[in-house]
Image (cartoon, rainbow, N blue to C red):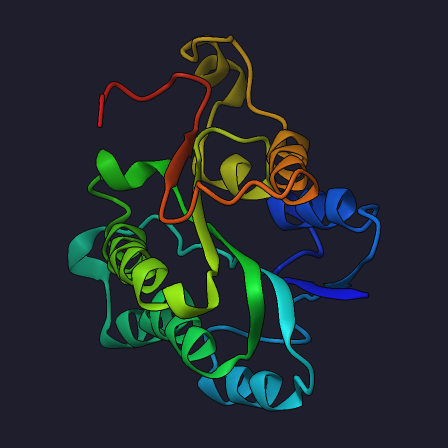
Length: 217
């Protein structure tokens, strides 16, 4: 039986990823919430890593994002918290968890990285930093033929988006499909990659925003 772990999977995108992965044959998928591992708390992360006694075949790196905040209102505490939550905790896991050959590692990132909004400085900065690290790791880890794939959700229907957008109905009208994305589609997409043993996406960053963005590359 292969071992899989989905971080921050009690709700939102993480939950739908877990729901889709748990039905794959020969995989045992562990559903984790912030109660099991708090990525903003390095001690919690180290405890989690230490508890993993067997090698991993599938890992989904996922965590909650920071709130919208004016740049000049950001505090030192904010920066240190989200440095751990969005960057160093994931780095620590990549350095210290043990993976089987050919394992999948999925990063749930954000589509805002290519068009960073000024009120999301913490998310822009630390998600971009880890994406760069993750891209390098995809090459560094080539001895084990790990498959590192980053997915960048756009306007997906989650509680977090409801907090970030004041008028969802008005916002939906601005989207190409006229509606928010279904988080289950991301789960189905990841399930398809794993079930069909697709390997040549290693190092890829996949935008999942329904055509909302304007960039080409």
